[in-house]
Amino acid sequence: ARAVADRYAGTVADVLQLAVPPRNARAEQQPSPPPLPPPPAPEAGSWSRYERGPAFLAALAGGGSPRAVWNALPGPGWSGELARAVAATLASGRGALVVVPDGRTAARVDCALTALLGGGRHVLLTADAGPEKRYRQWLAVRRGSVRAVVGTRAAMFAPVHNLGLVALWDDGDDSHSEPHAPQPHAREVLLLRAVQDKCAFLLGSWSCTVEAAQLVESGWARPLVATRQRVRGAA
Image (cartoon, rainbow, N blue to C red):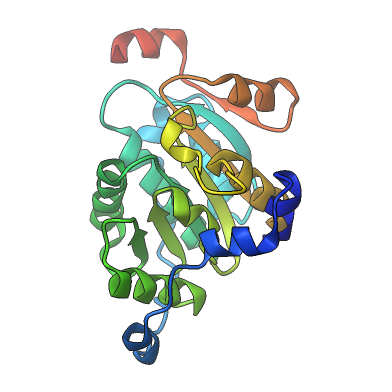
């Protein structure tokens, strides 16, 4: 919260108001379930369509912290690929955080994770959930019962234990920009968390924004792309 406040010339109180959902007494009194053991490392699957895709997953599963800007191929496979990146991070005993622009996109990633890992390993943090459910899920993350989070903009502050991966989908979407003071952008918040927690970073989209291209140009992140021939075939 202090790093975000300094980055945007704001106050810690304003950042904490964005980061912590309103308390709910009934949800606070309920215990969170015990955490599940780490799942096995997933196979590369459709990540093999990308030149460095399997190596990226292997690095996550091995406890590494790769940083990549991912140009996803056309089609619906991106949500399953995000789910595999999360599963690989969980297999290393670490946590993962995925931020997407809207509830419909979050639901797609939620379904992909459930199909790959089953229930109980991740939570969905969106504005569509009621106050009690949202706070109960937030507490499960805060207590370490769940180590994977998928959510919209506010989830960028989710207190994931032993964070191993932060991922953002479609950073060019206006929904990632918080309208309330100090108006942080999800991409910048996740970049700060990746640096502070020394964790992996994945910025994915069907196109590449100027900010994403700058991360690659500076050498801070590596491009994660498919060959031109495979892009043509997928299109």
